[in-house]
Image (cartoon, rainbow, N blue to C red):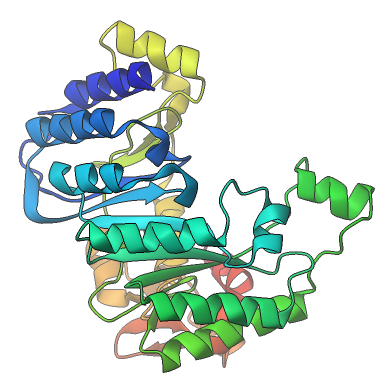
Length: 348
């Protein structure tokens, strides 16, 4: 772990100072389980970020944690190092569901993690929940949502289980036939029930899969959905800077070899060649994930093209009831969010 932390710090040093005119207002430490890294090494990583980048004093700085890999000491160190937002991968407050998912924590670990984070002084906590899991009943799901509301995190992410080919779930459902995949109808029913419960509890859905107490929307995620720049650090991390998209080496060996030679870990094959039309599609596709959608004038300022010269205005009529254009914004309706991929595919 310490060796990996050293590599991350060296990469941070390599990127540091390249964009002195940019102010960093969001840092997100995630992907995998960063809470496995010893607290002292996470503190060193944070110091390297502050030493190399102009970080705004009000920056949102998030770390993802697994409930079974945190402690009072880690939370205290996170706070002291400048981290001010915690994202906890709870997934469920039902132990049978957690066992099926292969999680290394149980319900009590999750409850304890939230309490420890609050005790350490964190006032911006996000919780991840998952639904449409084989065998998960509506009662089990509502109990999880209810328990989450009781804990009162500032932000909640809701994810539907996606069964990918080659995974253990795929084998158990489609090959061994020991599990049954959740139907699309039940998936949507669970989603709507959760949104209704959370809305009544004071949470606002600001993006298809995310709700927050007003004022606690994730600044970092909003950057992705609002076509803003970001720099990715670590193996396989993606970046979007100066209109260019590139990705670090996926293989740890290649990543470490580049760092060893004081080279940023991006090979020629890892630079993505997007056309202007591709970028327009990314802007629209991600922008429609937000409840407010995206602004047509901003699209035109970004690309110097009239939106309806690029996209057929007839699509608004085609998707009547699913897609709305009002007050200069194009957005999905509640019904449109249920078939979001179908509508958003028009822009890709």
